Length: 171
Image 1 (tube, rainbow, N blue to C red):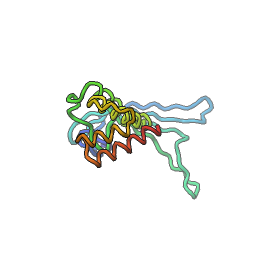
Image 2 (image 1 turned 45 degrees about the horizontal axis):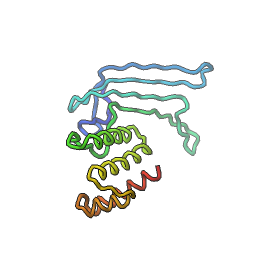
Image 3 (image 1 turned 90 degrees about the vertical axis):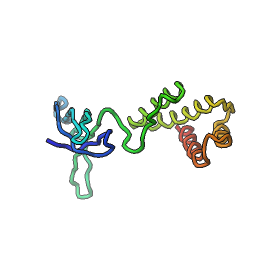
Image 4 (image 1 turned 120 degrees about the vertical axis):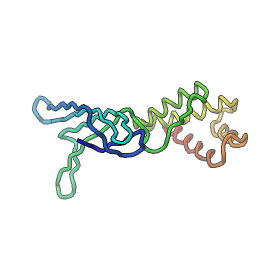
């Protein structure tokens, strides 16, 4: 059986071979809610990267169209979690330890879909970077401008950091 899942190594949806599968089904005490929880170990057909897949669905997971027809869906989670768009910093060991820690936690939050935590983490990365470069202003907006003025950022990168600052403020 070959299924298509996202491969974190190939960076795209690829065919995967099923290595192991275990399913659990059940219902509540009055059979109102019925569920299916499937766990699989899969291997990418191209690069042989191993992943763990969890597919969960229950009788309440459906959308109804304008004709009254119900369309059931399930949630699929692939582990380890990954970034489908974009890439992580590869040489993270070159970063100062504090920035490494905040970066790793922020990326993990982003992979897990925790976007409010991610926005706060991006703001914390900017703060840690400024601290590391001894830019000691109290106002983060001024600190970002100083990163640009001191040649650490381009104007476009500075604008992006201001956008991230606004996200962090909102979160």
